[in-house]
Length: 118
Image (cartoon, rainbow, N blue to C red):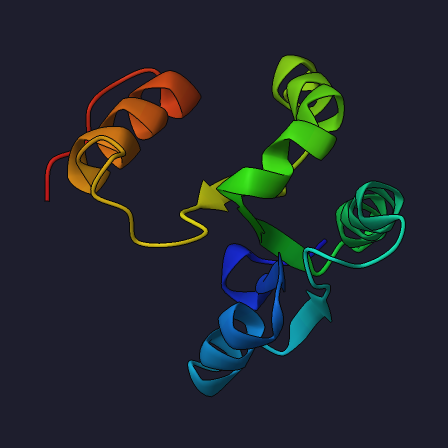
């Protein structure tokens, strides 16, 4: 069994998003563009592959692609047996959306059941 410190992060995203995260040290990634043919199927397939990898503990998915995988993420959250956490990140910085801090505060509260203040 792997220790928590041995788990890695994976990201699904476009060229810019994955490139930035690779600079931060993330080595597991999948690059797709919004105009990719069969984008939905590619995102779903890749997410399942990442979930099957026992070395991955966190999977990042752009918020505009989460609609493609809501059923997969919902089943993971219901089962509570999966060690990988799937988190969404903003596709773009957009002032129309809610405050990012409040978004992730609410997301964390929903995920683990209590508030985390840093």
